[in-house]
Image (cartoon, rainbow, N blue to C red; front, side, top):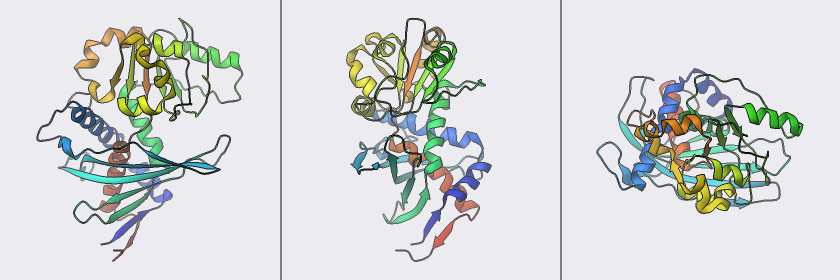
Length: 312
């Protein structure tokens, strides 16, 4: 069995030429299949029984929290991008190291992809950029804004400047491991119709927004109910008061068969436009399976990477 290894620079080269559509489609497909399985829905295309995504395993050191995220999910072969392909099942495990607060080391990550027939290791992919890409895809699927003016607020931004940005923004994205809310909300801040997208906190003690905003939101959309109820501090603390008692909505519930907004979005269209909507993602393994499969397939088609023959 040969082993294909993709370095960070090789992954960058693939992503530079990769159209956005297959990346978005890969995420939409697994979110939709994930939710359908949770509801017990099966059909010829979904292969619901193939989805396995246990909670991540965390191993802590003095400098890093190492996260192990195994998963198995249905993935579609893209072939020559845009021409479609048949559905397969892919098993993978991503290992990502989250540095301690204040570190500038980034998020080193690797994904191991298994051969479905033999169970042997098929590929080792540098996943540093893929973590950011799959988060961006999930965010884009939920918000689907055609254009936006981007303003950045870092930990050193003055509080009055941050408050001004938050109060006028259409989309607010938080990507921190903060233990305390990043800003104070009010009945008019964020403004009605704003999207608040949280992709940073992943432990019960972490909180990027306050409880008042969690309760004020008309909808709270999540990548996984179970994962967020176990790992997202904001949602754990809000309990049954999330979205004023309306509860959580999984992203997969909002997607139609095409990966575009489904009936759940259409039915709640006024709510999405006039009230604050929160999207919370802690990241689930099926996302990594899907995006890694897209990258590996392009590497195979274009003969990118180092291939070690007779690895196993």
